[in-house]
Structure formats: C-alpha cells, structure tokens
Amino acid sequence: MKILVVEDDFVCRKLLHKILQPFGECDIAVNGREAMDVVRAGLDASAPYDLICLDIMMPDMDGLTALEEIRSLEKERGIDLGEGAKIIMVTALSDNRHILQSFRFGCESYIVKPVRREKLLQEMMKLSLLPEGTV
Image (tube, rainbow, N blue to C red; front, side, top):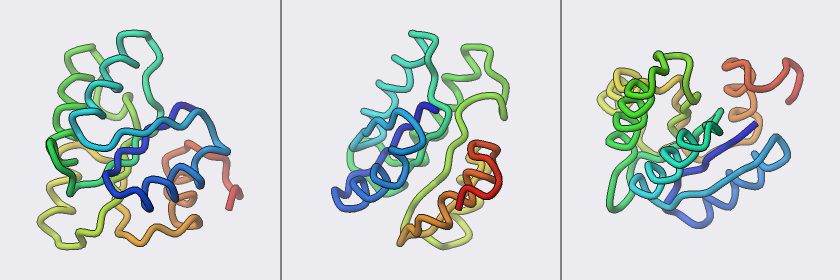
C-alpha cells in the first residue's frame, strides 16, 4: 500500500508515520501544497496513493483545500469518486461544520486527534485497506 501523511506538526507526523509504516510505503508532506505536488507526481507515474491521512489546519494550503484539489485532480485524470485515494482527515477540529465540509469535499473518514493506533487501523479496515482483525 502507498500511503501519504500530510501533517505540519512534527509529533503528529512522526506518530502517524510510525503507525502506518508497517503497512506500506509511507511518504510525508508538511502542508497541503507539498501534498498536491506528491499526489500529482504519483498520478503522473501511474503510482497513486492508496491512503492519504490529511490534517486540516496547516500553513500554506489547508487540508480542506488540498482535499478538494486532490479530488479535482483525480477527476481530471478520469478517476471516479470512490476509486481514488482513500482520504482520512486527521485533525483537532471536531465541529460539525468541518466534519460535514470534509465529507462533502470527498473524504472517506474523519478522526479527531489525539490519534489512537486502534482507531486509525479500524478506519483502515472499514475502508478495506487492511484485512479484518488487523487490530
């Protein structure tokens, strides 16, 4: 599995990388703009990401903007909604406005920090990225 962690906070980025690394190639981006660059490069190389863990509050380009642009980029490439990367929003924001907006923009899951390994792996199982019983 090809995974991208998009997180500006060092500690959160390191934790997500540690949890996800055993399950595949795990790349890191520190903001939405950098994420767009690596997502585009993956699509150009016919090696798209299977999973993107995306924070919302980041400098340069926030996660909601990145989410919207990732889905737009996939659409331009002929990738239908649900056929592209599975995107899990991983954020400190727990208000309904951000949650609903994230799902409207095309995320598959939403996890409120602090991230727990079990919760993240359960969400990955729900998205058929891991076999049942992985936790």
